[in-house]
Length: 474
Ligand SMILES: Cc1cc2nc3c(=O)[nH]c(=O)nc-3n(C[C@H](O)[C@H](O)[C@H](O)COP(=O)(O)OP(=O)(O)OC[C@H]3O[C@@H](n4cnc5c(N)ncnc54)[C@H](O)[C@@H]3O)c2cc1C
Ligand SMILES: NC(=O)c1ccc[n+]([C@@H]2O[C@H](COP(=O)([O-])OP(=O)(O)OC[C@H]3O[C@@H](n4cnc5c(N)ncnc54)[C@H](O)[C@@H]3O)[C@@H](O)[C@H]2O)c1
Image (tube, rainbow, N blue to C red; front, side, top):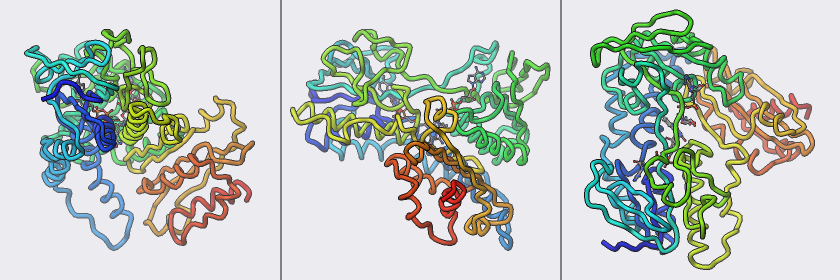
């Protein structure tokens, strides 16, 4: 095994894998270091298993809206088996095969920066330390170590061994009584999934006023209404003060700030994620290891002499989404290759533009929340001359054809000065595939006058585009 490579990537999650593959495809030698499973959090404990658990519930929602179809009983064991299939039985052979076929070398172990362009590879997950190998990068090191769940310092919580995304997405026995702490994306998706799979008494303790605080407020309200209609209890402006689990694996008592006491079988902590910067050796290269790694728009870490360090994906804290990590990986890979070859490193694809526009995101609840660009509040805070238009998606022919009681709401945030879209949100069942049309319009900055000529087919839900423009006054 050589110990000098052109580029060393630490972390083989979606961001690290894409960077390694693209750099190798350009002819540079690449080592990728992974301490757990190649494919990262997304493939085994996040995006893929959560969506596998949600998919049958989504479909069940669709079926109940269409007269003439009867919904059969949900076979939870088959849903979990499908989840296992989607995570390849927690075996990364397929991903390893992909990395190797892309021409990169995978090293199992924990990577840690040792000095400029130097990375120590510790066997296993690095604890207890064994014999290590030191690798040197000729051109660059890419940090793609992802993120981990934040466990709030609630007395008794850590001792009660709460679930994080790992236990929730990997569920084997669905708890009957579940307490979810948090009101963000993981809380909403996993409450929906686990309640649908049998967690009859699911309670969300939300410290803020409502759910999904980063998207348009109406989206959080629609999801809250839907979860409540399904039987999920939501407690806004509430906190968990103390937790007791006297018998490991036994019943948990949670004491809430408002005075209520809850007895539950499991607690899911969904209170955000922290960039995986601890113990990757950032202090050895003069960086702070308590915060996400700051980067410029070519994904190069700021404050590192000679600019050999890059950080992509969750670890830079810009946008905790797989597709954005992979986009950053493409930017970073192309820049590294160009700089290594002495070629121009400022071509249009070599700068991160998408993150500042507002990353597209789908929250896979029922209704789905699909958003891109700026929310109204963000646009106003940034000083744009904002006008918004909204439209009820159940009122377009394609919407009513989706089923009885189909409801949805679209909102467009318009920059009045330029007559372009700053942001679009769709909240409706099955709206995820509509989002990319909005992403194109917002990213390219299509003028409303041009958008008018993009005629949506009848009778599709896409006609909401036409209705939004008509509501705007066109
Ligand atoms: C429940 C849940 C559902 C989600 N659903 C979605 C979704 O539907 N769509 C979406 O876009 N995003 C979703 N996300 C977010 C998504 O999972 C992350 O944005 C994505 O995984 C980030 O990719 P990454 O490559 O940066 O990091 P990760 O996927 O975390 O991968 C990092 C890799 O680095 C390895 N590593 C860490 N430190 C070291 C080290 N020192 N040495 C060697 N290896 C190391 C880790 O073992 C891991 O394999 C979800 C997140 C959660 C929690
Ligand atoms: N479909 C998707 O794209 C998808 C799905 C899941 C997760 N993700 C990504 O993963 C990331 C993490 O998701 P998340 O839901 O963990 O984080 P989040 O930031 O979306 O939500 C965190 C929630 O926890 C609350 N909170 C924070 N600290 C708390 C405390 N001490 N006590 C009580 N409540 C507290 C916040 O008010 C918020 O409601 C998100 O940024 C998201 O982008 C994406």
